[in-house]
Length: 203
Image (cartoon, rainbow, N blue to C red; front, top):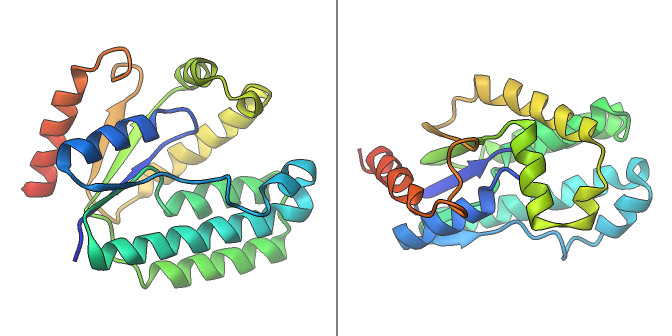
């Protein structure tokens, strides 16, 4: 059975960058979240209330399948955890009125049924990034859709992340303070991160 390390943290926190570097050092496979193959994404941007349930359900199904494959076949790093699908993004859509109560209840029923058939990750790496750090990194990577998003949206996600991680108990958690650790500008910091991660997963 493969070992699984999952990353979590707000948009722009640096999950994909560190996940890729950790996977390379450990010689694990790496799974990056793909949005381009989601057939509901474009429709969602034009009408979020109509398509939010479809979008999130598609993401959930594909992440579940990827995790089940990894469990049986290989050591893998995921740049986003499946828990964020429900606890952060679906909840945010529901709380902002873009997903109805009926849709949200149906979605969370599927989610909790699915995770009963998944083994818990061997480690969750949580990248803790404040709003200023997130906005700096979003500007650095320059994605137009993200640059147009109101700051209130990132603040809402930040609140949901803080609530969720405070009660998460499915695996060991390794926290990275994004205000201090930035392996893009300070590559040498990866050595410390790797020592800590290896100590946890091998201990």
